[in-house]
Image (cartoon, rainbow, N blue to C red; front, side, top):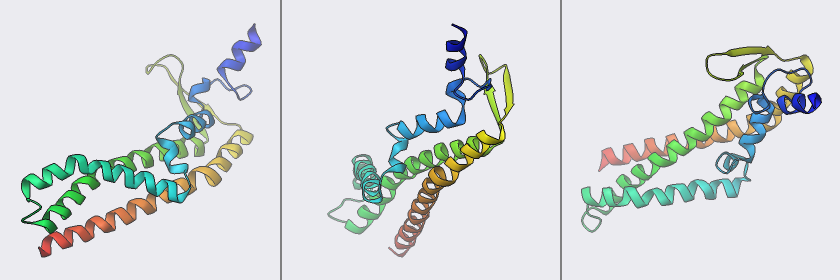
Length: 172
């Protein structure tokens, strides 16, 4: 009965960190989640997801923009304002994806793991052995960093397009 309890507690031999708080298990959980898996999709599917979020954001931004700028009278103003409003939700989605993957990257890259045994009041620190550090850093290098790079590029393109929209708005 004792070996089962130990195997439930940790997938790494001699690791006191609860299984659900081990960085590699956190990575697996994040990569299997419905939302965070979006960053792992191939490029066309990833771009379709981002376009889908932006399109559905128009359900909120469109009526607000139409109330401010009637489309029949101010079509360009309506479109620029609606696109900017719809982009806010997309920005939040991208930011949440980035922060989630950056957190996992940090947990995997660190040589020490902070964990809680039973609650927020009893935090502990465990130093990873060299083989665990190597495994975790390989996951960061080949799995997580490309995702973070993709998200940074997407956020950069997004920032440039918002800046362009701002200049277009100023010219109107």
